[in-house]
Amino acid sequence: MNVHLIGEINGVTGINMPNLSCFIKLVSDQSNNSHWIKNEGDSESFTQICSNRPIVWNHPIDLSFSTTSVVHWPCLYFEVWSQDEYGRNDIAGYGQCQVPAAPGYYDKIDAVIWRPLGTFLERLRAKFLGGYPQLVNPEEFVMNASRQREDFYTETMGSVVLSLNVVVQGAVGDKGVILKRDAKTTF
Image (tube, rainbow, N blue to C red; front, side, top):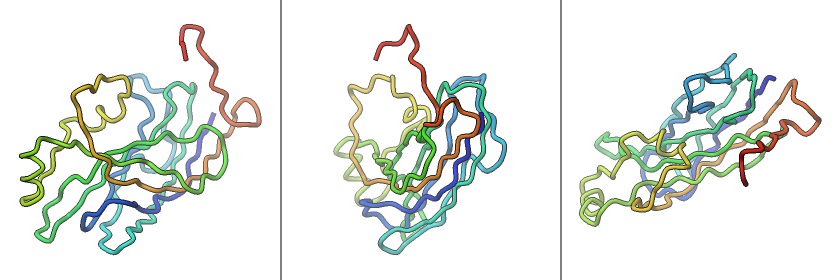
């Protein structure tokens, strides 16, 4: 089966920080034996820095994949960065969203962006000096939904807005990918 993703990252809303840019990565499989093979396109990229309000990136997405299994359907992973007047880069937040499994045009997909809250002293220092708390291994932490996070506090920063065309070729049925329920899995 072939999956084609064509669209753009329109911009970001709700983040009140200067000079924003975004790192984007398509994460298709967390295991070592990936069923997803990239045919064409860049699976990760950076947008340009935008200093105007509203933040508009219009960064293109054009990817083509082949797969032998629909296990671990791909997700888009985001890191939004801010650059201050001294050229220092600071994390504005992290986020992710699932790529739709049904073919079609998705006009507005919102990926919520959040960042670690940190202690009072860390927040105070970041307010005056910059340097908000960052994750040590952000991609693994954001993409691993089963991880226990009882003592981990975050603040919502805003959302990345994207539009996406999903083209599925060679799928079973006319409604896109049919994800069958595993007998061992409970929902």
